[in-house]
Length: 103
Image (spheres, one colour):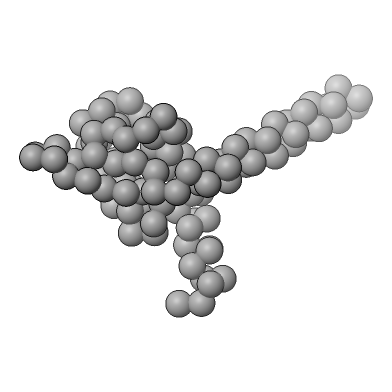
């Protein structure tokens, strides 16, 4: 797999609202899947599907302890990407608001 394709897969994995909720929830550290799905308001099966995809792309780390499965961000730099996207969004909203106000 070439690096462009791999980067695109990581960005694609980040570009989904449920996955962004999961990432935001894991910002402060490792959590059990039993905590994740209620916190983000999704069904456990749907949440597990998203978690597995993010593990396979290298965004999350998975650890099993007894019957519980825990997830954590594998690379904290992911938060930089998410935070930059938030900054861009805020700038765009502010700019569009100014345009509407001026019209």
